[in-house]
Length: 272
Image (tube, rainbow, N blue to C red; front, side, top):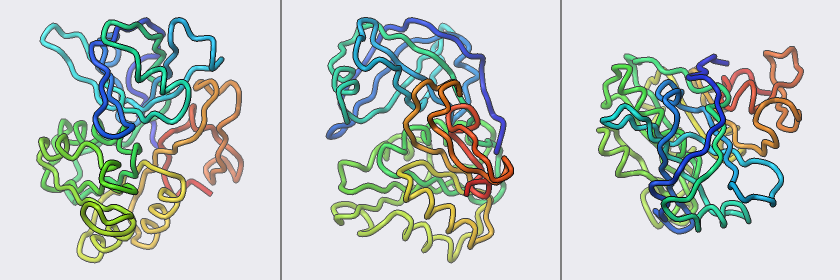
């Protein structure tokens, strides 16, 4: 497991500058945030709470989608989310000017280095959320975008997100849909396996549904390739206090570590 923890942790009130639908049930919000987010690491997350929130009781976790530094030096955070329940439904109705309670950055991020061999970035649906920031940080570290291939997977074409942002950064994208409505017809892991027949990557990064992540980890082991997985799971506190997001790892002596505190990014080889 890597130790990319980015900037310090802080709680603050932010004001939305944008909150709009980008595809189907997917939304992206933007807001100016504390200067410590300039050191946030790709793969870290935040927790949000509406100021008038009574239900749900607990804060909700979201990956950091991007951090942009304005001309005034003030960072702007972006969060990509999908409407799946009461909280995200209410969040999607918050107009620009609304205020939210933000806590972060939390957790450990991806290992970012300028690989001299190819890197694969594998996204399943909303799992793309932290991977835009990852690719941006890989480029910032000096990696040639021609060496980065992004695999975007989803059930339908409306689940294929952020293609324009990846293409703007100059990286290759390979699209896969389970219904065949866009790109390769099948699973994103099949597309990855096909690519690996002719590629020798230095690293595979992935974020998405549990089944997809376990498949990517298995593929990486078979290819003897380093792999980091960003685990998606329910997190009640986000601070490692409630112990509710435990995963079994080999690095803890066949014991348990917690996604919010020791992750959400793990070395695939460390996961049981």
